[in-house]
Every structure is written in C-alpha cells, then in structure tokens.
Length: 163
Image (cartoon, rainbow, N blue to C red):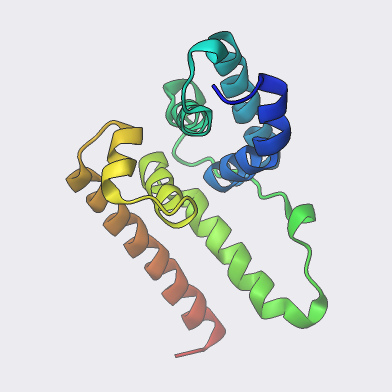
C-alpha cells in the first residue's frame, strides 16, 4: 500500500468519477457507484496492494451488479449541463448526444467492454479478467456493441440527409 485512503482519494477521485460516468452516462449514478465502491474498499484498505485496479474493478462490479439492472426499456437521462457547447458546434453536440443515447441502449456487458477498451485502453485479456469471462466473449460483446453504434450512426446520417 503506497498511501493512506484520504491521499488516494485526493489523487484519483476525479479519475474514478470520470470512469463511472462513462460507464453509466449519468453523473448522479456515477457518484453513487464510486461511493459504494469506496465504502467497500475502505474496509479492506490495509490489505490492498494495487488500489487503482482494485477500486476500478469494484466500480465495474457494482455497475454490472444485478441490483443496479434497469428494465430493458429504461434509458438513463444524460446530464447535459456538463456537456454544454457553443452554438457554432451544433453538429458536434448532436453527434455527441447521439453517441450517448446509443451507448445508453447497449446492454451492460457491451457498454462495459467498450468503456474498458476505448476509455481505459485495456486489451481483451485484461477486460476478460475484470468482467469474469473469456477474451472470446469480450470480443463478441465488443463486436455486437460496435455494430449497434455503427447502426445508430448510420441512422443519424440518413436522418440528416448525409451520405
């Protein structure tokens, strides 16, 4: 253990919150996830060798937990106050909003895999270890998730009249 719990929170708290936000798409739920994970981690702090990996895995487990599952038709609202853009960047805002909405429709496993791959820059083996499945399953989740995101992007472009 390299530091005390308070020092760790000061150093990595914002990073953990960003990770949870990318997973959930909801600022308040991200705060809840981080808080629950940190309560769990605090109890074991003296025995943790790699706090960054341990806490990230705890957040991921809480996110994938059955207690947090939504019904299949419920989509979280996005916290737009955090992403306000100038009016001259309207296309970027529309694209970002479309991406968040598309991510919100993905099943939890697919969203977690894509977040770990593209936000945390982990390889399939590391993702498989975190989620508790095989690397082959990770590749399947990534493939299906990316296909759904591509379909959403194609639909957006067809609505705009772009080719």
